[in-house]
Image 1 (tube, rainbow, N blue to C red):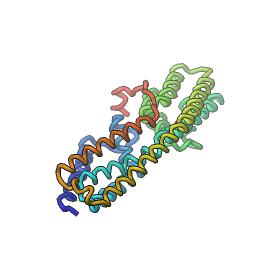
Image 2 (cartoon, helix red, strand yellow):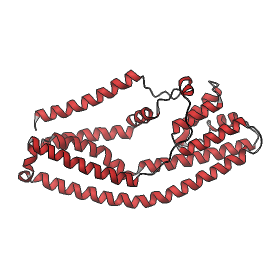
Image 3 (cartoon, rainbow, N blue to C red):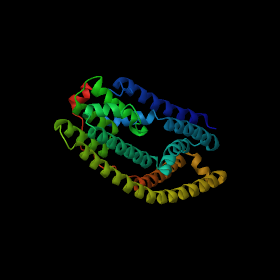
Image 4 (cartoon, rainbow, N blue to C red):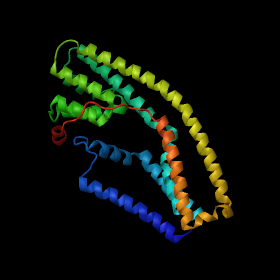
Length: 293
């Protein structure tokens, strides 16, 4: 194994990791739910704190070291890191499955609020009660945080609901939060029927998305075949050392980088075809709300 190549790879990894930690410390990012981070930073933080992603990164590092030991190619090692992290996520389709689960949880929670409001409870009291029992797991932490803001910190209902929608970061959550905001402004009869109607719309959305996801599953099966064939051809090429010896040179590494980039672009395109379109949000959190949350 080329010692300089290994040192180069480890140095790049250390620089990227150190840069992330430096930016996180400088910005003061933390997992505090009462002071949400900006949208892009929050999503990046949650992804980096995800156990599945952490496990994927460890597997990626092991794959990079193994590829570097077999081939001695730094470009191949970096490509192995990218493939180990990205390809399983492309093939699994977990994003769409998780979003469908979150939508189902929002539907159940909305129906529960409607039942409580029909029983004569106030909106704040209904939200507090919904956070203490039988809360759907995908939105449990978000609803509990919303209830704590309303009852413990005495945050205005509109501001708390906007933060609730901002943390879920979903157009459907925006619709539910907007309906609840209107109900806090116009207290009276009809709140239960409004929420039940909204829950019906969410249920139809879940049904439609399940049908679309079933069609996308066939697309991911095709991608799996492509990945399998590519792995077999790559392994056969690497085992024939005389065939791939030109890649040992600097020019060969540059060519390999171009080839890897082309494959990455193709897989990114396939991923775009299979990725669901969540739509655009319409309910934003005012700047003042972010600062006082």
